Length: 359
Image 1: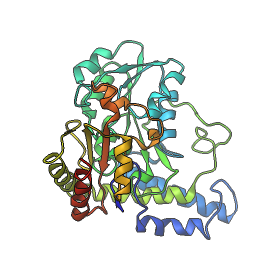
Image 2: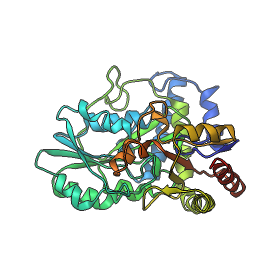
Image 3: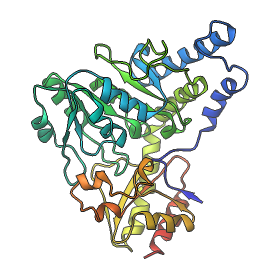
Image 4: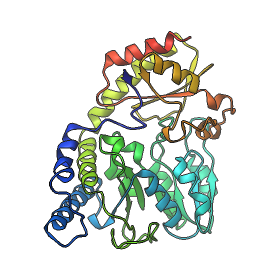
C-alpha cells in the first residue's frame, strides 16, 4: 500500500515513540498529583513545554496544551480577544464552525482563485469592531501558503489580534518566523510524526484569553483536564525534529510532488489547484474524481483523500474549492495527494501510474 495522505496524519516516528514509552509504562503519574509519580510527570511536562517554546521561539508560559488542533482552533476563535472575528473563507472546519459560537460572532474574508487571501481585500474587511483576525498559514486541502506576516501587520494596524492555524505548516515553514509576527497560533502533534490527541495553542503575552474547558486548574487555570503526559513528551520531540529537518523535508517532498504531477498531468486531463503551494501537497481536480476516485485508488493500493480527512464522510462539496470560485460539482471532484518523509520516488511513480490507469 502506498500512503499519500500525510496531510491527514503521519506515522509515529521511532524517536517520538522512544521518548513517550517511559510515560506510557513506568512513569504514568498524573502531573497534578503531589507524590513522586506526579512530580516526575510534572517535570516531564515542564521539560516538554520548554522544548516546544524554544523550538517555536516563544516563552514557556505562552504554550497551552490541548487535545489537538481542533480544540486549539476552537479555543482561539471562541475565547481570544474581544470584538468581531474576521476569518478567511478557506479556514479549517474547526475555525469556521466555532465562529458562530463566538460571543461577538464574526465575518468571512474571501480568497482568490488560487486560494490566497489578498492583503488589500483583507484590509477592506477590517473595521472598528474587529478584534480578532484569523488566516491559516497553509491550507490543509490545497496547500496554499498565505502571506501571514503581511496579513498580521494589517490586523495590528487596525488594533486587532491575529491568529494563525499553523497545523499544516509544522514540517515546511519556520515556526519561529510565524510566531514572531502573530499573537496566537495552533499546532497538532500527529501532522509532524507525533501522537494523535495532543496539540497546543500558543498565545503571546498581552493577548487576553478566556477559558474554554472548565473543571480544573491545569494550564494556569485556563484549560481544565488531566494532561496527556506521554503525548506532550512525544509532541515536543516531533515538533523539534520536524523543524530541524524542514528544509530537507521540503526538498524531498517537493521533488516527489513535482514528479507525481508531471506524470499524471501529462496523461490525464486534470487541474493542479492553488498557487504558492506547500511542497508536500498536490491537490488535483479531475473530470471524474472525488470520493469515487479515492475509493478506486484505494483498491489499487494508493491511500489518498478527497480533501480534509475530518469531513471525508460528509459527501459535501469542498468549501475551500467553492471559496476559490469552483462550482459545487467541481468542488466534489478534487483529490488530495500528500507526501511525507517516508515516501519514496518509486512510490510517487507507482501512484501516478495507478491514477493514470483509471482514465
